[in-house]
Length: 417
Image 1 (cartoon, rainbow, N blue to C red):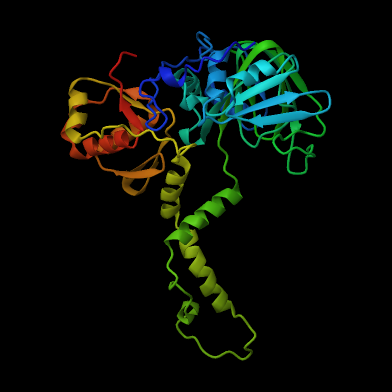
Image 2: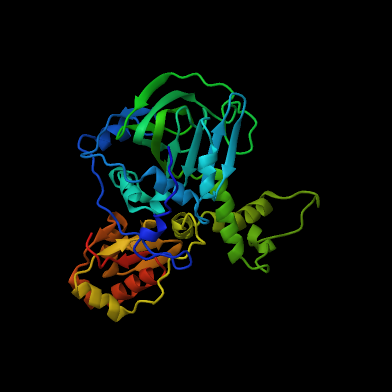
């Protein structure tokens, strides 16, 4: 059970205060010792659930229950508390006062905290073994704590999820694949299935992992107290979401005087016999006006890179108090100080024509040259690394690193890891 919340997480980070929030010090990841990613992708990914019995070289739970409770009391952390009785499910949204957890009594309850990987380095490290899935698909790590019998009810998600058992035990049941016709119970906050028939059932212990593909019904129930689960969720933008946001972006760039003109319908426009007809050539001209913009693949790639790399919580300020200059970057490089990514930041790149690389970090686009392209690719592949000293000779590389530092996306880690 929870003891009094310690609220130690934010205070123990490397650079901290909510207006100038620091980057957490990254931890070494815990690799898998017996897991074939290629077989998994071929046979299970987005096809069927898979139970993976403790594949870690050495499993160590990265977060304590009291620390999770402390996060749930923070103003800028997204948290929910789900309580249940025989007849109803109730959901409350944080932040919660510390006294809330001592008022819950013996009925089953579950605390869920979103994006804990942006707050706790050890939780962020849990993502590393799953990097065989591209960065742009990874969303966040949600952490849950439940008392005996606690859960969030039978439900399904629209995305892939790896459910890692951290502490205690949880019984997981998996059912059939659902769709938009699947009946849900009426509830403002929870997507509860009206009917749930389990086809498989397992009890997970610390280090065990359950993979659940999109839209498969599943239900997790804590077996005993102190049950903690880490849910690594993946992003799956809907077609309607992409169309809506892409169109919004295009509309922002368009001018009101960009209008249809009759020459769009062809060079030899002339009077028509029936004034009520919208001719095929007119339709072709109008359709061309739209598709010329909508089907610009290069423009879409640049937009999607910025859109997809935007931070989950963009209002959180990670900028340093003092901006970094090019000469400061060079000094760090000569001192052999590693460069580390902010776990709250998102990094990806797109390779364009002639192998030109566009780097996307936290919604910003950086066009890379010959000097900065290898660095950008390494930055997207590794959380923390030593920069080659020769890179200090490149003004464009020093400028890029300074910009990333000054927007709070990276930091030089001066303390020992």
